Figure 1 (cartoon, helix red, strand yellow):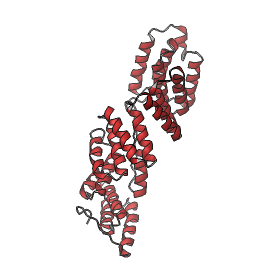
Figure 2: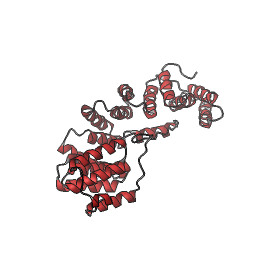
Figure 3: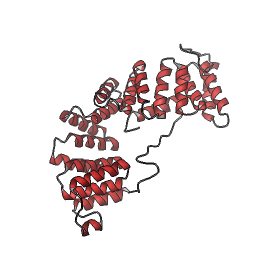
Length: 331
């Protein structure tokens, strides 16, 4: 998720196929030590104080800094790793007040705004960096991300391309371009971008999932399978199991698809999801069998399976039965 990996496209496919939606909550930092909430207004106020040269707390005004600009930066990095974004911001602010030329620290401030979803504020930070150093490639990537998340995809793509012109090894730019190409239906180009990102970050499991989705959307199901399997070497995310299952269904690996669907949720959901795959292929007999098993597994809850069963029965009644090759599943 999911940075933006091909999650949006996966969700779109899930809605098209009628597959059970799974909610994934991302957590930043330690779950047992949640950072304090800071609203967009608070952040903007802090930013305005910083730019006006006003310290962020009274203690800083009354006492000279005890640490160097570099030490404050390191302290900010530590708070960022802990997920304590407000305190990270305070330390970066102190570092910048001592040495405004530290563009690396300003980049980190912009990145914090991206993390919190304040795209316009992030853009201002990256713009300030680029005003001082037009060749700061990472800031150009940050600009692209701010446009991407705020929905201006053309500006996003332009900035990612400019970043790669400055530094072709920036894997994040390649990744975002891959996602953009997926959304535009330019799947072969998306494959190339994700492959380029993986050259620089071969252990980044989210990139393997993204490459797998690009292969899947391009109809290259055999190539998609190992990428999803590799993605599962990291966090066992339900969305990746669903992607793996979808690729298996396209190849007629129905038992493997069921197993992957089940890893993503429950047996009832797995039977329903596999039934939907059969329904899409117009294999109404297998589809009906799967939906019946879903209802048996969870009779009081699974209304969706009942709806899908009626569709399969209607297909059978219309004598439009089409079977497809593969291992028996749900018969």
